[in-house]
Length: 185
Ligand code: ADP
Image (cartoon, rainbow, N blue to C red; front, side, top):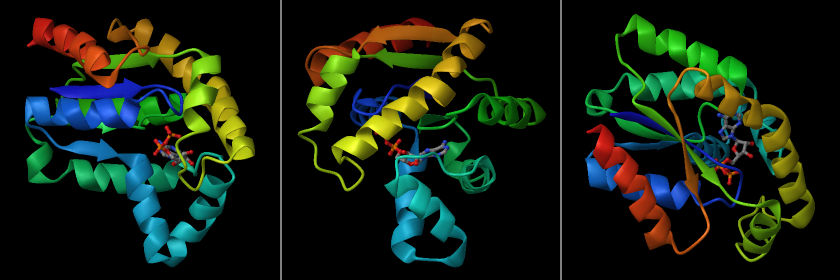
């Protein structure tokens, strides 16, 4: 199964994606992690992306696509994967659709993890990652509203969107996700 998780920063998308990947025995692909890794290695290609990330902005589509599509070609992704953080813009989603179509790999489901802005700010202020400063967090939330939120309509109109309430313990949220996934299996 190929499943995309979409949620604003702080929604728990990372935690839930890891668990779901284990549950379905498929790889967990986080573009945020991949990009942080590029930044740690300080290669030339990453420099612009790292500055953007530190400011809470999205990195250019071309770089994300290059990194992700390379990874998706690997054998362990044949049976499916959980995508965490990609696609994040409508153009990324359109490229991904094309990529999947060329390979006859259908998108099984897109899960939106929905959490109120108030709750997100509460959660993010206590998390402590280096891009979690209040100002940067606000920038990331704005980027979500502006660039990622339109994706929900994009996928809804294609009939693949499922909404999950992200409020509650990680276990409660995971149980909600599993029941949707189990129905689809
Ligand atoms: P969160 O969703 O909590 O912000 P992520 O680890 O998913 O955390 O992403 C961290 C940062 O990585 C983003 O703020 C953005 O700068 C960059 N990033 C991750 N995925 C993408 C993507 N698909 N397109 C552009 N930038 C991305």
